[in-house]
Length: 319
Image (cartoon, rainbow, N blue to C red):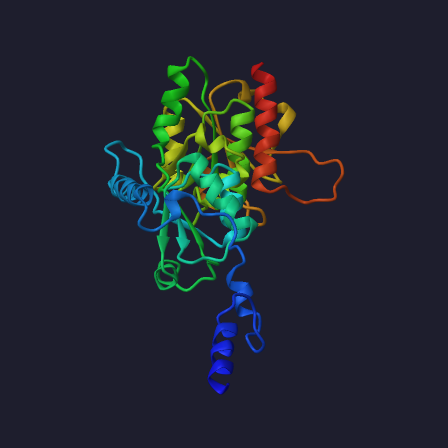
């Protein structure tokens, strides 16, 4: 009888489902783990291997400097689930999306994978230690987006492009503007009012980062941004080519509505909020113009707003 009882106990213990003392672990093991990731994100899948190879080729090609006179920035990383999703939504250029192995899926991860797949951005799976190393220990949350180096134009190219189109050059130069969002806003205004590009100094100035791309609302794809090794010498070069250099200053001698030169070839120079134009740049300008502000609530406008106001006036005069 004892033997029969033991056999019955063994048969009972082999039944499926949770048993007393299991803590429900067997039931949890049967629960789903969310949608299956795209083939490009599944390690070992043929599409994953193809995506990895394509990403390596892209990075290798972009690491080589162009043969023209422009320059390239370095690649940039966007780190974290929300920033990566927002960057992909904004159509910011991307070389690859790194996805942590065994990442816990949520709505942001699924949207990032879907957006990257729809745009043909390679999805590269990597272990967490590798992502930690890649991001220098930042809280990447298992998602990292790589932005390719931005290809800057040469300052001379902006005026040449305008002349080739049979138009008087309308260029904005930024002096000491370090906030990428201001640069992005200026790029957007240049696109809106028919300008021919933006010039930024090579050092101590905002460049075309993810923040600038996002603020530009996609217009950075069709507006050239040039880097100047020395902004003062670049402005002097523009003057020799027949362009009038106009600096924006709160204490300018000319009010915006009096600025007749906006209908011709012109470079509009905006300084940083607070410091304004540097001394050398200010002395190089042909004219210093002020924007009347009847409200008087603000002593100055940031570069993005000020440039937008002047670009509108230039567009109105050229219409």
